[in-house]
Length: 145
Image 1 (cartoon, rainbow, N blue to C red):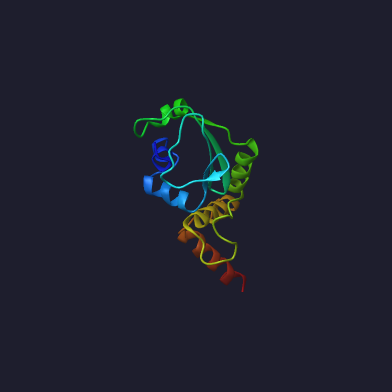
Image 2 (cartoon, one colour):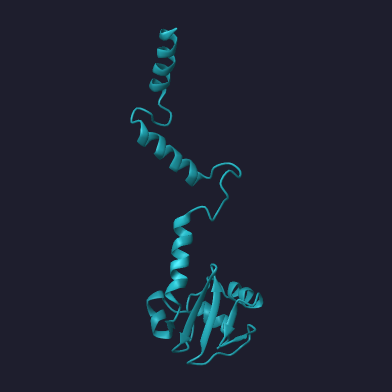
């Protein structure tokens, strides 16, 4: 089976064209050799894949006839990726500023929700769109003068 079809069939990539694009970008290798999409793989081959800024390493156990379900993937490949690579991925996800540099542009929808949660957690009277709070805020400042 061709390597692009194999990576698609074991659900490593969402589409076969995505798999072939990644192969063209030299992010997939069999053993130590960078391969082309037409490379035929066999049982026992070790495939190294660079995806999401980490290096995956899988060993081929069986060649599937076509795309398989997610539950059947362990019957066809063994994940030999280093634990350190998964730790790197976990740290990047926890960091949360990998998607945008702080101070650059408008807040995203996620940022806005976090800000609203933070503001409402500080003062229970404050809620998004609470007009009574704003009226009382302006009325107390006028009474002080």
